[in-house]
Image (cartoon, rainbow, N blue to C red; front, side):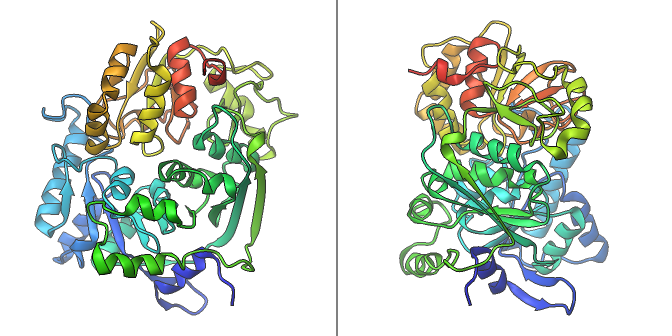
Length: 466
């Protein structure tokens, strides 16, 4: 019987299926961080039990950490307490922790792939919705709640109902100035922020296959923003080349055995999906959001929608979103003033993102009125950026290269955008108050963000490219 990639992985991880109910799913790798793990560990401690398989749990500090002066005590009390609790819990339960100061510390969805922990065919979970990022390797990866974190810590299993299946094809060649972030914002603008609710989404097509691994991670990272349970891309030679030689990747005979298995992980030609979409890469231009969910996006040369032109799912919230954003129906988005530029988050903080920005801004200076934060996704990315001289390029442009962490993606740490200020962000969410109370977020690619940093306004990056 023909099977999809998702079905092949799912069926290999079922321990038991409850009649008329969910399945008990085995979890290969469990990532934890300081925000959603303390309550779960408290549950274990109250019951007097230990983590069942600590060697399959990987911990890091990312959400609440400062991105300046990480050698000093954390100023915010809640953040400090959560990080301290993570250190204590990992020590008591024998869980490997990549905390502040560790050379592997960073955003959980950046360090997993770069360390070779993330591999095809796995089931992977974390108390964080953007765990879908790891699906770029051909794995089933999804976010879970705190009670489920406790369940995995105690059993290495999880009760899960099988989602419906969706495939999104993007065929053709991308235009100049268009990158993977634009692809996923374009898809979101077409199917809406709820268009994949209840589905596991496989991304396919020549435009997807031609992406690097880091670009594929950006796509899968934002599958959750469509309402998807997870996103995944079939592994191929690009995937295998990326993994080989990394810290925790298999070696020798173990590599050969794994590789033979990984090569079976693809959707059979006659497999059936519940829903499919088809998009042409040539139709995509640099994208930017104007509203308060990631599906409210337009091409940078377009005008802000009116009720007559907007996606049906966003029509009812258009006026409220634009009032919060201080934008007008029918007005061009291009030329909108920008106060902050944030390049980072689990969506766009990898070395390729930093190289892309550095290549564009080299020899240029930021606009005087714009503050620019570049936040690497991990200590390894930070070290590589410095080794390549990328930090010097940023310094000369007036950008600030900070230390690793989730930073201004969300208002959980010191890096908040002030109320009423506009921030072009390479992160994944533009909800009201996401980057700080009253902050106004416009999501875009690293290239579009860099262009705004140089000009001080929303800019079509293609006009500044050689």
